[in-house]
Length: 132
Image (cartoon, helix red, strand yellow):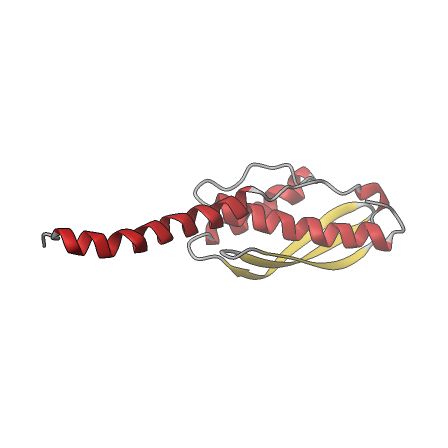
């Protein structure tokens, strides 16, 4: 189907709005900073962490024992096509750090899950009377 001049004029503002909205949403994901809380100050227990953006939402349960991350469960992950990012929890447990590579093809979801884990770990540190 070939579009005529007037049809392009009608479609142009819609395409511009969609493009700008997409850029803003991606920028939101790119702005997420991941920082390792000091696990030496973390209390033992199970901590719920969550992080939400316009595109991706995550809630996790993080277990800490003897200043180590022992288990991470994803309780909720609203992600579109970012489901493969859920594998990042194994990388975090193995590395005992949030400074791990994002899952290829699911970078945005990886960052949101990492930030949710960070939120849970920050609660563990606060409960252990540490400072962030």
